[in-house]
Image (cartoon, rainbow, N blue to C red):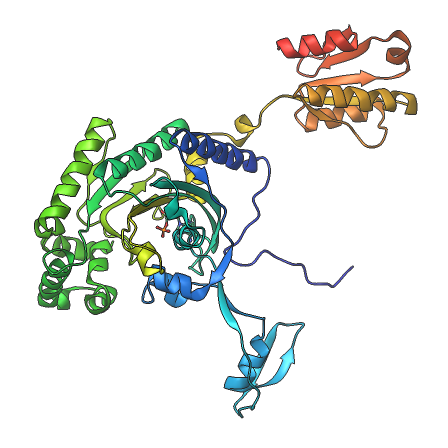
Length: 460
Ligand code: AMP
């Protein structure tokens, strides 16, 4: 027996396998269709970017940037870097471990630090600037799908490589109709997937000015100081680092305290309040149902005004399937012109979990019925190749076994693969020009010419 260690997927990553991948494909296809109908075009941005891009956009003191990014120097000179800060004594490459000696070496090195993307909004904004998209008719409406990477503690619905489907509207106006239409598109996407039981929570977190969010945060902070002793350690720490995040707390004993804290809606400036009122009116106009949730603050620094989150059923504690909001200053922060912006990101892994939980079967998502070609003899194989080509061109799924099988074995295999029909091609069929089609469910058989076979299958 081999003693070689087996490889395993890295913690927090996983393989997506058939038949479940059929469900992933149909979700992604629905995104292409629904977003396309709202005038969005697909953008594909790189998987890795300079770490600085995410640090600046997402915010240096967020968990994502401070401890969850997968970063590496390019060129990949970890060993030299480690030599510079300490010196590597033993490098055991087979174990991927090394220990460090503390005498400094004089070697110098140059490397850019890159990161696997933890989200895509920063990249989309970078692409908007880099490709001069501000010269296109505004706003520019883009969507993306793909993997993101965050070194979080893995659990159900939370992975280190996970997938997002997102959209961004950049440039032009910040009219509340844009926010409302984006949310309408999002909810029609979930409706198209037959994902019932989703709730849309919305809020406005104003803009960063003394007469708006900054004033509110100061007030919140002073109220939190008064109840500090009663809060847990996380919330106590957040009073200084990010008081808004205290509102996110799920701790049971903090809930009555949070319920009595000042609410941002009472502290919005006139413009932000008017914007929020209009967003709600336009959601009503479009028949989009929502709940106002004054505690919804979102984790990322760049949000302002409209923020939202969508909760789905069957997901336990990780039940947010989508988050997003307005981020009017972000493009400018990344070196572009002043640009309005709003967007969302759907957690595709959680969306799929919720669909499976609701009983949507991955099998149902895979299209047509399978036809298994049971061929016997080399002459029949030539005919079988032609038959497979014709049937596949006509849109059928066809399994053509690569080696000849005994008749009974072939039918057994067809059954195991879930085929509905077996097309039997042997000497008799070749001689008569009439092929045998067996319906596996009831064992019935019929003889058909190639043309009649196609017509028969098409009518099913
Ligand atoms: P965010 O980019 O943090 O606003 O997240 C948007 C959505 O992505 C969330 O609502 C989740 O559905 C999903 N998401 C975020 N982090 C993870 C993760 N580690 N694993 C799976 N899904 C995630």
